[in-house]
Length: 383
Length: 123
Image 1 (tube, rainbow over the protein chains, first blue to last red):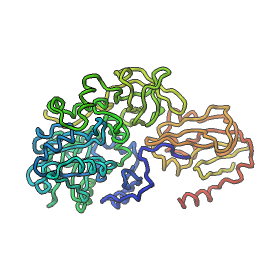
Image 2 (image 1 turned 45 degrees about the vertical axis):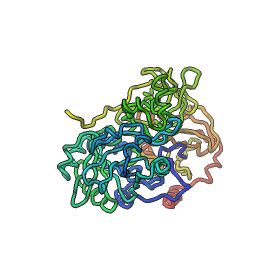
Image 3 (image 1 turned 135 degrees about the vertical axis):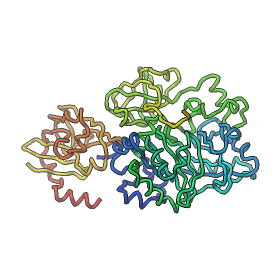
Image 4 (image 1 turned 90 degrees about the horizontal axis):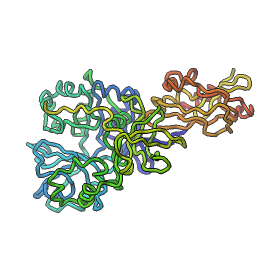
């Protein structure tokens, strides 16, 4: 047997780095694979079981490979608004936004979360940003090139990041830190747990309620143990993280999003607030405005697949005899109980319910453009 | 009946001129949760090493090769409804297909159970 496709894109060129929790993962029975330059846990007991556990209880994900950046200095908001299409000036303390870095042609260099800090968090820095692990060094290079000297960027490579996700994440975390119960989706706060400062946001990438917890690397083991000692919490690997985010309709950078595609085509226009669209002043604005006016050439869509054969990344999408797109993420969706996919198709074929075909190993399988998310989001918003 | 193993993690039960082929318990463990098995058409002829089946786990698709040459005389239709049989019973009920053996001498290079176990332990 041989694997001919692997979501984890095992990298062999560079020596893989270890996460702060490396030994902890191995002790928990994780199978480790190379991902984004790190040895990471792809699964513990099995992807299906871990996926379902997260949808029903709470899963703990180690996402310490992601880049955690701080920004401060005079004019930091203006400088970041030059780099990001989102409203930074209007971002209140302890609030978080989804955003992205665009190149001059409006192509997506990375997607990210940006927050305004508050209080004494991270020694009084102004802005906190989380970027993808595989792209963090390119992002840093890009930002150094485009930020003025007055703005200081600090890459916290001694900081770990945990995500606690699932319908029982709220009660689990509140049992350790009661004040976290007050956070709503996309709100953050600075908390103290056993003398350790934790920057916690109510967010994540599974479609479930949950948190992302920034913790010093030296303290992460204590926190991971305390969380996994709770009856609601089990450690969850990258495999289930991928199937959960796919069901939630959330794009994965490097697969569904690349420099070749645009924000509007990606259906991420919500990240560009009205003022930013009107005023511009960010790299890539021309493409955004053009596509808002004329429509994008192609769109990121969800695909419901008939039968049980999964269509995976790279599978061509057809309308009759003509190829009209390509699958960018796909696989079996445990909660849906069927294969699903995300792909890019040309605009005329992107409307909901459009019947298409996907070619898998020379066979055509029927697929329909479907609304996303495939599994409803259950974020904790204001009642 | 004798059971043989390949270094591609397949097992082969030989009874007369018929060989039953599946993947080993080690292989299913490595693949993880199996969600689909694409089986060959009955009547198809394979040379040793040809792509004969595809097994899809949650995370990836993997090829299964014909461990010896022969004609497919039967496939395990139970896998269509319950691909997870490969996880729960890889080396019995989770078999893939039966071949009419074309060249029995191809069995000679294969491992027996003890040799395969040693091979897996060395991985």
